[in-house]
Length: 359
Ligand code: PMV
Image (tube, rainbow, N blue to C red; front, side, top):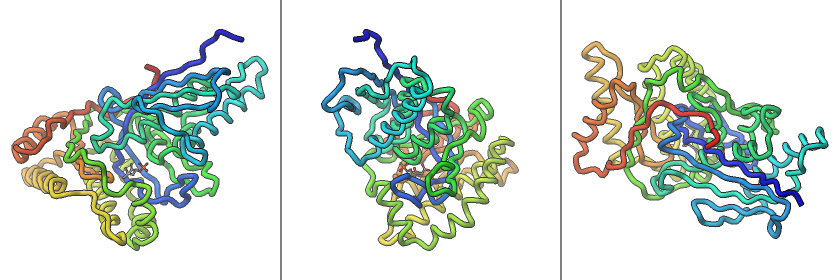
């Protein structure tokens, strides 16, 4: 028996979409009905850290997984199973080509993953969690550079759609693709974080209660019942993907803010257009929208550009994007207009993140 320890630890950050993914055209491969684009947040604040070890002695069952210290079952038809199997196949491919490689693809695995933010904060942890898992297995199996990050994103996508975007830092597009096998449904970098490091994100935790309708069930219902979603898929998103990519390349905050807010509203409109309707935003979320709109209107009236942009995922928490120079003004306004709100855990995320990386 060999005494070599095969172990890897990697982390991956959370990402927040500015053009939202909402709807699957294939629910088992997780192929989306439209392209999406996100900003990867700072790893210091919101990240998942995963450690994986491979060993020939691991058996019955060969794979075990702990999330935040609690063991989770790896279900035979589940997404975790798919991700592990796909990564093992990639390793097997390398072993077939090179006799000298240890046969890690035949070893069992022990995996543990932790978030450095409370899972209960109502913030998506599946994106960073699956991205960290994929990156850690890629590192353990020494898949890179033979296997590209975009290739890995195709596997992360099968864990949780939005996870494919967390393998890159900065500004990331998920190209939905057209094939039925998902080979062209992957993430690509639009611009690295350094390209626009003045941009910051503020997360206002409006409620840390668990969201009402999980994204998978919500998407399914919207795809099945919303005529507005069809318009969004065909007309709205394709134009916005082009426009926001240009705005990012030009570091045009005004345009970026305009498109980001419009897309958040269009996404929540498709939720309202779902039967029965889905409500993710609450009164506080809407009050933040009004505040942001008012602040921007006043600034534009004074001949200046927009100050801040809002976006909401499948929950009531606001994510605000603003250039660094506006952040203290925005925080001051939020505190002034919501003096009693429990925004203690409003945190200020510096710039837009980093690649999944070794700890
Ligand atoms: O990847 P999921 O199933 O957690 O879905 C994410 C959906 C949104 O967060 C609402 C939008 C997005 O693009 O991240």
